[in-house]
Amino acid sequence: MYFVGLDLAWAEGNQSGVAVLDDDGRLVQVGAAVSDDDIEAALAPFVDGPCVVGIDAPLIVNNPSGYRLGETLYNRDFAPFEATAQPANTGNRLFDPPRAEVLCQRLGLDPDPLSRGDRRAIEVYPHAATISLFKLGKTLKYKRRAKDVAKRKDELLRMVGLIEGLNDATPRLRVRSSPAWLELRRRIEASDRAFQLNACEDPVDAVLCAYVALFFVRRREDVTIYGDREGGYIVTPALPPGLTPAPRSRAAANPEGGDVLPRLEQVQQLIERAQRELTEIRRQLGG
Image (cartoon, rainbow, N blue to C red; front, side, top):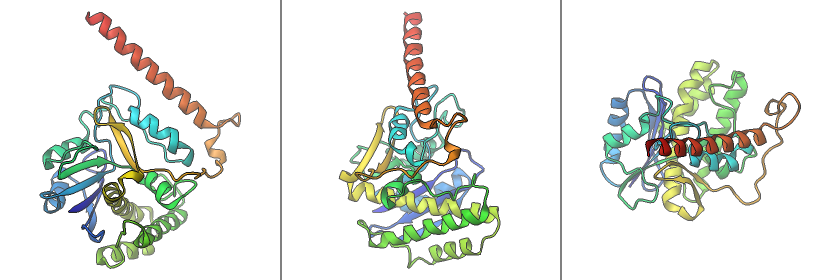
């Protein structure tokens, strides 16, 4: 059985990360692809038999606006750790239909997280996985929007080290013997420009996506599924009991000094209420 990670760009034309683990958790492939055809070609040898593909991108999107229920439930747990999920809805042309859904259909993968099928796909989120797996108080700041290149490089190398430490975890992730992984690490260490880090972060995230797929199969009792097949969902290793967020930075507060998170929760609830009322109005007009 193979466990595949796909750090999928929302739009075709941007780089996506691809990684594959074998049944023993050994990294057998890691790299990048751009087009849907390239991604399909990279994954095809590993998904024609039993597999689970962990995709970091909205997979099932049916709501016309606002957040999916799974995102709202997820954010209640993970937003305090600075791992907020952004809203996906069909009002955004990128999700009508979602690129991940199209790829799953092309590859013949079942996107139901409760499926017992041999060839499945699940939506995952690497940021959430880092919080749960490594017991972090907040996410590591290695993504493109981080402006300080030196700090970003340090954070990405820290992520690489944490991933390598999963060699001693259950289940094991074995990356240290992979020439492709060692080359990826070398490229990060040699990077001093943002575009160089950009080329490396997606494959690193893809490895974590693949590990979440492995974790999902081997430690199902320690996984949380936020949402469901009908409305969309996010799968992640469950938050460890007692894990607390790191103190919030000043950037996370509003000008009056209040925390942004309660406001975010209130806005999400207002959006959900408005969506329900809109649905009822449309039903009455249609009747």
